[in-house]
Image (cartoon, rainbow, N blue to C red; front, side, top):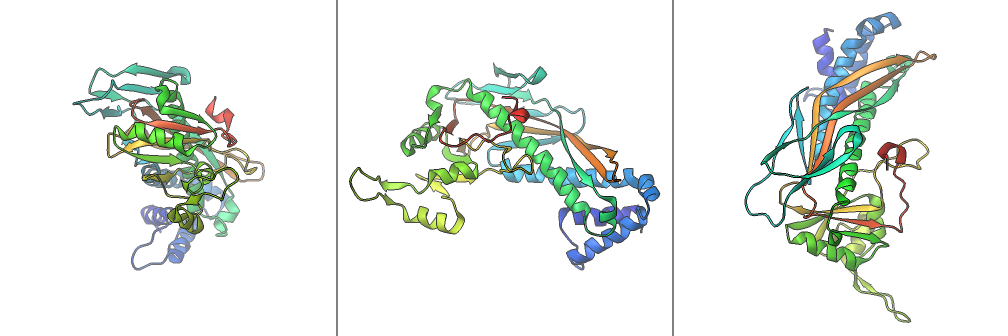
Length: 345
């Protein structure tokens, strides 16, 4: 098998796709056969590992932007640029209800806010990364696959993007009007107030983690009263909770569930703060700007047990274009499980 043939098969395996005339089982089997040809022994693996890493890089760079756009594209504009290229974003000109500001990461991780006087602006990027462990023997035996390794590394880089977005959103909240922020236990009327504010700029959409959405519960049509019967709730909310575990609309505003995962195997620290919900105006200029710069980079380290740790990093950045047309709700009755050492606040 030539390196080009192996590359094509490996990309199919990593993406979980198969040509029309093949099944996924056949693609995975062909990948294992090709890997044995390139790395049938330790020496062969060491000789060909950089070609294998190039395939991993190519797989990640095909998968990562799509996954980020699928998760955040409804409220974030995502740009992919080459190494060293400037990521230029254009703000819409015309009638504006308020001045537009830009919040983005500055030197030493300090977030800066300043007025936009031009119709274009640059979002800078910095390197973030993560790693995965490859058990060489298990991969040759077919017990582990490149798709699993790529999936782990890609998920880590995706989570890094979510962290950058949340850091920028929290930083922007520091300069938002007070009417755009609510902090306290869940109160449906306070969420309505935030929706009313955002509705002045476009149809509001609520973005929150599963924990926040679950705490919202069904919306009361008639609220419970002291020494009286229970309240009356929307049958659609009850059906949605029964079928999916969460409500999917609140007072006409769609609810979009943000990706959530744990930092480590203890299942105690999360990547995204479950207390926070964001309300963005739909159908308008996207508030969040994300840049992915250059190719993913990889290096490795061999452990004493002959397993190989593969570290991947990529340059990325995030900016918030404005702070007056979106809102944030913090449900303080929920526990903040976000990893403080990752966020730095």
